[in-house]
Structure formats: structure tokens, C-alpha cells
Length: 339
Ligand code: DAH
Image (cartoon, rainbow, N blue to C red; front, top):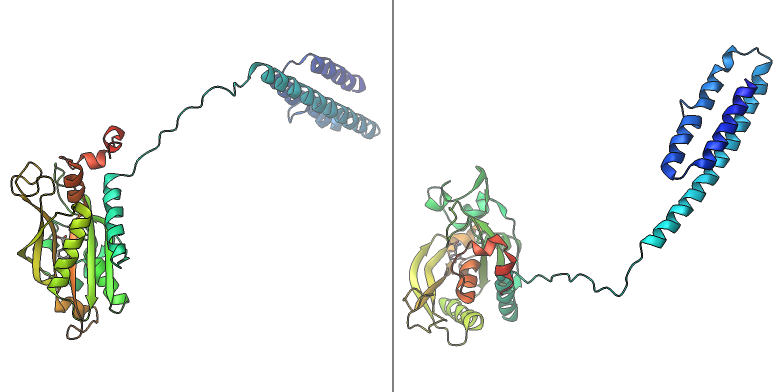
């Protein structure tokens, strides 16, 4: 047994001196010192030795193992250094080589419009409000005076998650949330994503963006609404922009109107952008319905307010001359970098 052990030791040291790389070294180590390695197997076989010999042989095996382990570690260090030296010799870096240019993106046209609108309204003393995109029907409809049989509540128009929860179909629910949580005076806008069950075409998308506006205070009248929208239109679309109201109906405003702006491309003469109308439909608006105020615990005898809501895509398309809405969502850099 003693000779066997010495033989393993000598052979191992000889092989070790011949190993060229770390892989070979690892294999050799497993072969000798591993769980099924030569030395380990020998140690296991010690049971068959006469009792007196066991401690002597045991000690020898342990000694040899210590020696070999030390040798392996030495060799490993040596090989690692050798490999590193080789790498340093072959992999030289040319620090003078020009780096790859990282391409800078640009702000998406939708975000540009939202940021611009925010700037304009912040300048008029408004705050920016926020609300959930996954919204309770209670806020999306009920609080906004939109009765159970109203067509907007139809599953054909609105994405329902269940009977009580929808993907908000408008930013208007933020009005109700703000009025519930804050006392007048209230002056907010809320930009955000909204969802409708529409098929995709050049002017429709099931996911789009709106900006909501709400002002509630004492003595707020329709003239405040018109003045505010006129100011906004001039700042956003150009100083010469005119605005006109057409009567309309929304459940949450009374009276309600739709506002058009004079075409900022042709100045009202009629062109491709305004479809020869001279006017471009801009938004829905009106005086906050007393029921909505009451639903949110605001006394309509004391307070009044106006609200408006518009689509961001429509403004982006008109302003940037984009003819197909789908381009806004395809994220083709060639398209996006133009703005
Ligand atoms: N929420 C309406 C829509 O999506 C737009 C709207 C109309 C918002 C009138 C308002 C408003 O705040 O007063 O069609």
C-alpha cells in the first residue's frame, strides 16, 4: 500500500509538471484528489488493512494529499499568470481608435405636445393632476353624471375589466377624483393615456392621449372658459389663432360646447389640414354640471366651474403635419427623428 501511495504521488507530480493549461490541471486534480480520485479510493480501501497499519497509512495518505494539494495550487497560480501574460501580449487595445457613436433619441411628438401644454397651463397657475388608467366605472361614469344607459358605457366603446372596473375611456374621471380630495379653488390639468374599443386606422387608435382641464371656484363663468381656451390656443397654435364654440352635449357639463380653432396652417382659408373647412375641431368643454359638483361634495350654489378635454394626437398631427396616426405608435426612428 505504501508503494502504491508513493507511486500515485510521483506520477501525479510528473503529470503536474507536464500540464499546459488550467483545463488539464482541473482534470488531473479530479483524477487524483476528486471524490472518485485515485487517492480517495485508496483511502476508502483502508478497511481491509490490518488494524496496526491503518493509522500509519492514514497519516501517509493525508500527508501526500496535503503535498499534492499544495503542488496543485502552485501550478494553478503559475498557469493563471501564464495565461494572463499571453492575453496581455495578444489583446492590445488601441486607445486612439474613435468610439462608436451612441445615437441620441428625440422626445416623442406626443410627449412634446404634452410638455408644451403643461408649460402653458403651469404659466396660468394650474397644477398637474394624475389619476389611474385602470379606473372604477364609478369615476369614469357615475361621478360624471353619466347614467347607466348612456351609450359611452357600452362594452362596444369601453374596455371593461369587470362590471366595476374599466380602462379609463377619458381623462375626465380625474376631475371627480380631484374634486373629492380638494376644496376649491381648483385649477388643474391632467394629461394621460386613455383607452377605447376602436379599430386602428389613420385617425383612430384604441390607446391614445388626452389632456383634461378643470377650474372650480366662486363666480366662474363661460367667459373664463372661452378666455382660457383662447389664450391656450394662441400660445400652442400661434398668436393669430381664433376660437369658436359650437353647442354640444356632454353628460358632465351644462352647457356643453365643442371648440374649434381657426386653421393654423392656412389661417382659415381652407387647406388639406383643415379639410377645406378653415376650422379644426379642438376639444370638448363646458360648465361643470351641478350634479357633478354635488357628487363630489361641492355646493353648486356657492361654486361653479368649467372643464375641457382634448386629444393630444389630434394636436400633434395637425401641428406636425402628420397624416396617419399609426406613425405615432410605430416607433420608427426615421419618422421620430424628424420632430
Ligand atoms: N371627456 C370628453 C371626451 O373624451 C371630453 C370632454 C368634454 C372633457 C367636455 C371635458 C368636458 O372636461 O368638459 O370626449
